[in-house]
Length: 144
Image (cartoon, rainbow, N blue to C red; front, side, top):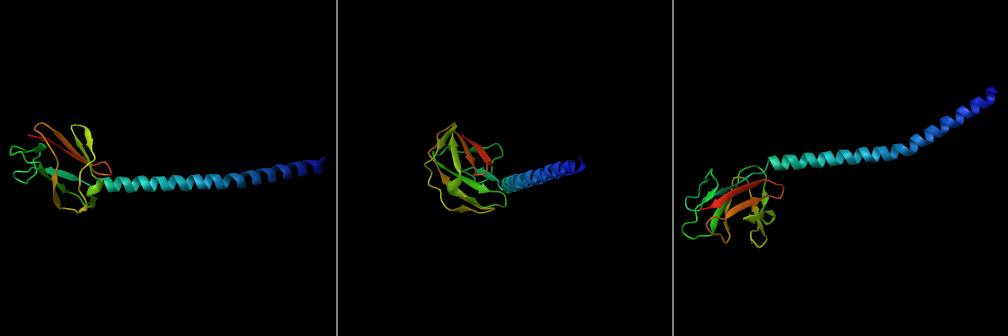
């Protein structure tokens, strides 16, 4: 009876070792995927913190903290400034006017930190303009 108990215990131990070995690969892969996802999330958060834009007034070319674009002359120009440390691809900027996506802007190139560029859109008095970066930072202004 002692010999059969020893063999049964050995079989159970071997089964547990084989099961643990089979599941270790899955658990290890899952943990690696989780770590990669956390790293990507961290990179996105840092990128978002390092990105900022402001919309500048057309008549004075200075930021208006109330988010207004002076369009009294009928001009469709305003300025967008990169206020943080990450460069922004202008083609990736998302433009919303009165909540509607404007996909036909011809902005290209890079907006480097501390630099601005003159943007052209067809705007009317009372329009709400929102510029959104690829990582979700945005600036809003109302056309007055």
